[in-house]
Length: 210
Image 1 (cartoon, rainbow, N blue to C red):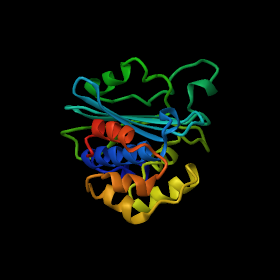
Image 2: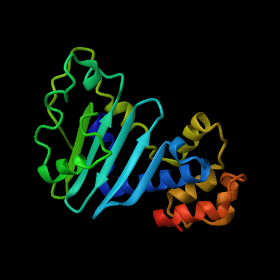
Image 3: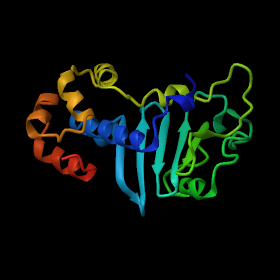
């Protein structure tokens, strides 16, 4: 399956990212150590989801009234601006991206030039789109790797949590979160007995999951 086929529909993707951000919030008290995060009101009419593996790679997803755009950066990719003699975006990455979506990447803190691939989808599109990039032989833009960090099933998230947080999660509780069942204090305690529920609740309220 190629990168674009891995991606769910925009609304499903947004929901998945909220779920994973909520689980990260419960599992990890330190915000900057969280792998998945989500900001409901990142900008006017725009939500932002982010995957940050702490090793220099990230995936930023912006959801707006016009559509969605995803910017990925794999620091080991040959397409990275830092891997070239002249620091610049690899040709083609942003080609044909709609201006109304591309402009979202101009926001301070996004780092538009730190990119190895870009994917977008206007609300009128029937599928995700990607810039036509001519890659060197054997090169990898990191898209499969980073899109693969969007865990689409509870089982995949449980495996991730075991590897990343070194925690063994009850699959039945994670399944409930993925199904959209309200997150209760009891479920929070089942996922992470050491966390202060009141603090978690405040953050989960911002994600609109309780």
